[in-house]
Amino acid sequence: MNFDTLNVSRDGAVLFVEISAPPMNLLGPEMVRDLVTLLRTAEADDDIKVLVFKSADRDYFISHVDVKQVKEYREEAAKLTGEASIGLLFRHLSNSRLVSIAQIEGRVRGAGSEFVLACDMRFAARESAIFSQMEAAFGLLPGGGAVQYLTRIMGRGRALEVMLGALDYNAELAEGYGWINRALPTAELDAFVSSLARRIAKFPAIGHTAVKNRVNDITLAPIEDFRHDSDLFGETVRQPETQQRIGAAMARGFQSRDAELELAQMLGGLNN
Image (cartoon, rainbow, N blue to C red; front, top):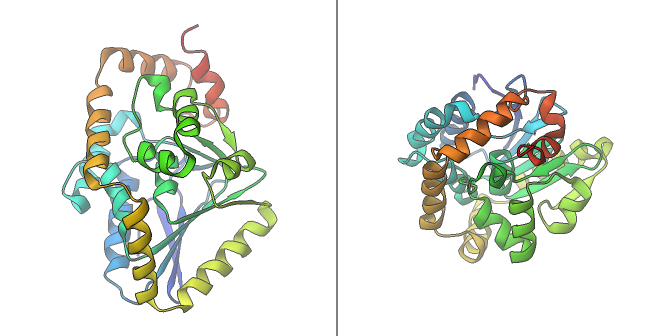
């Protein structure tokens, strides 16, 4: 498998997928196109059972969407789901027969957070992982599934805190909120995730499918809810106030590697 933004290696029934889209792993049309191709290819191979996603960049896992290419990345998602929505693409991952694990180092915000929420399991480096669902700082509703995933995982109060506050959360607090399965020391993270992935891959695929289907029946929101959130995002991102706030953030370095190391602080000062 050859991709522009993903480095893929195979170990038996496990695919290890390294995200590599310099300078800061923005989720744009190239990455969405690669994810679509990856899912199609892996799902068509009955011998592949588990996907492990990690990042080549220790500061950024997936930073967020590229706000300059919203139309383009949504069109790439439609090639798998039939609809221009990364929310439906991420829900497809949750609903896939493949078991997906996110191994998180660095920042995972906005659609990056929604991507790891769509994965079946999430494990993060205690020293470096940072989480944020910051769309409300621009006057936006998260359109990639965060409302559905976070509310079910955290409960109403914490989901509202996370989405309305647009703050950064370290791995330890994310673990306490249920955002991730576990926070682990960086030195232990890779070995733990790799061992778990290989263990799961040894078991019959029919069991993976049966368990995931039943868990999804209980916890995965209906596709109509994902579609509705995606549509609301598409509507609000075009609003003048949202565009003004995005422009103000861009003037302060939004979507540049160094400025986004402390994104929550920048977003809190947009009215100044």
